Amino acid sequence: EGYEAGAKWANPDVEVLTPVFVGGWGDPTKGKELATTLIELGADAIYSAAGKSGLGALEGAHENGVYGYGVDACQCYLYPEILASMTKRVDVAVYQMIVSALTGTFEGGIYSGGLMEQWVGLCRLPEEEALWEETFDFEHDSLPAGVLEKVLEAQEKILSGEIIVPTGYD
Image (cartoon, rainbow, N blue to C red; front, side, top):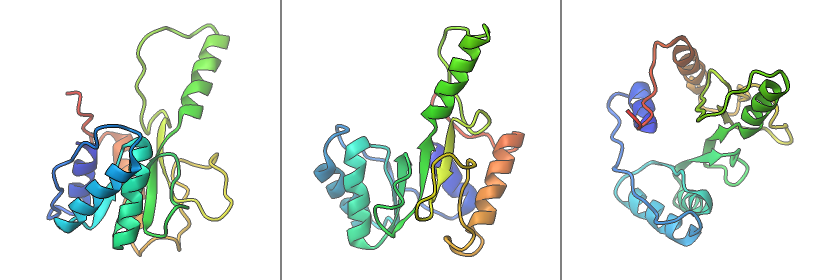
């Protein structure tokens, strides 16, 4: 739901195709086949949250010349068509939990975090840049004109509460 909401915020006329399930996290061949099918149906970008299967989906995007978006960690280095990656900042979450345990403020339970907590982010890493940079670490010349500004606007509006990202759990 979050991907579709973001796509429609950026372009109200966009058509987001119905998501498909690969069937498992470890089948890059199936991921590539499904991505290729979506591209044949008119998709001009592929976003897959599918573990190793997602790597196949990104390969399908590359081979068909459409944009792709990585997930979990920076995957922009895989193919030039990958515009960005949604990153899960598990390092930040674990660090925050360790600090709370050491300071005696840790409370057990289920935790969920987003941009506010810096538990998720977006990357497009230039050459050898480390993953320890700001949440959005784009170089200004690495994206089409206006994209970085739109990404930063979305970040600001999400952090201020003006944009509420659907979680799929509501």
